[in-house]
Image 1 (tube, protein in one colour):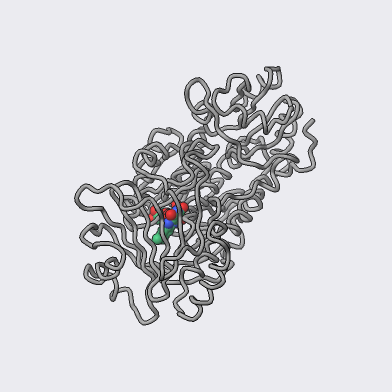
Image 2 (tube, rainbow, N blue to C red):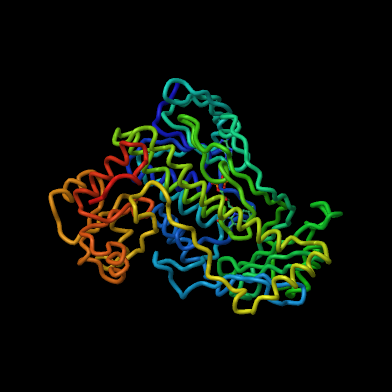
Length: 496
Ligand SMILES: Cc1cc2nc3c(=O)[nH]c(=O)nc-3n(C[C@H](O)[C@H](O)[C@H](O)COP(=O)(O)OP(=O)(O)OC[C@H]3O[C@@H](n4cnc5c(N)ncnc54)[C@H](O)[C@@H]3O)c2cc1C
């Protein structure tokens, strides 16, 4: 018998799980299928930025991460002599979102927390041990063929979202190819547990740009440490994966006895961006849509932003508040960010991965020419949205305290209208599932919202926390409805 749902999520990695929670919070009917029975066991993400922590908080994943994470005091790229080539420094303890600029963590902790939150949401059904085999587009939706422990079944869905990772069945089924941004390097990645009850050996994340062997050394969650070793041209994975080989590679930096090896894997780091992120009812998110080298720790961060950008748009289309074209704004808004961050990760990767001694000398001469304080940069930030918002909007809204907690907690994954005074327009908006708050009711952090309002009576923030615009409340809400109905084009709508 064929089952029916509104959204079929293929793949329950962190991106599929976050998408499932966002949809579930809005009561959207969804089925999430996952091929494996447990979360992915191999070493992967170690860093989350502050915006991602905020979005994961809305998905129920940040609390567990926060309890088992630590910030970086700096992220540095040093040459074989230990000289600073470039680096990044956080601007103080907390970012305006209310989260640390960096959280060094353990990916399975996040994935378990997201799955636990998902299990509390009645409109989303999770099916482990269920693999998407194939699908076809029929009418307005898709019919998916799913291999289950009880045999092959069909699931009909209005939307199929491929969150099924780098080798995505959904992407291949849609015939979508990648734009290759030119990076393909083999690295051994080692996750270790610190021995003797040690919680950390450093608060600095380091890239040792030594042409003899490029090495990454990163604090993770307290009590854990990550090493990454680039393979040399003559090396095969089996040459570097043994305990002795690993100890020999750690030894120039630390006493290998400090570390117990927990997980090891050889990866090829790529920079790939899908040419299309949506084909009718088929949509890609996370690694299925893009993969980048991990030198900025942004792959999972980017996938989380995808999920946060997408879920409310799917909901608005399903409930008839938005036309189908709104979903085209997903790639238009997300791809520039992914291209920018992938380009930066590739550029940093090329600095790190230099194995030619002559090229490394030229690199060092060039980079060391700048004074040392000019070689350190602020932690990277994405530019604001250029579309999908009113003129003057597009920046990430800060968080504030409201009734002793985060405003984000009170608002949830919904649009937020901040007003100077209540009106009929705001009451109607609340009835549509949005959250409204008076500026005067905000405690710590109200000034950030006042600055964004710039004297206007109201400020509208999208569920993914980008500022839609400022203006008269009634005009803003009319602009928001028109934006949804008009397929995500807002730039020409006057707010006031
Ligand atoms: C060494 C390394 C370090 C990294 N460091 C960072 C970092 O510090 N910060 C950061 O933000 N990112 C980092 N990343 C990237 C990050 O791990 C990924 O971007 C993230 O895991 C992608 O999540 P996802 O949910 O899109 O895909 P995945 O995590 O790959 O999940 C996809 C899921 O889909 C399932 N699946 C696949 N095919 C099917 C099918 N046919 N049917 C059903 N289920 C299916 C899989 O079993 C899997 O569970 C790193 C990656 C690596 C390799």
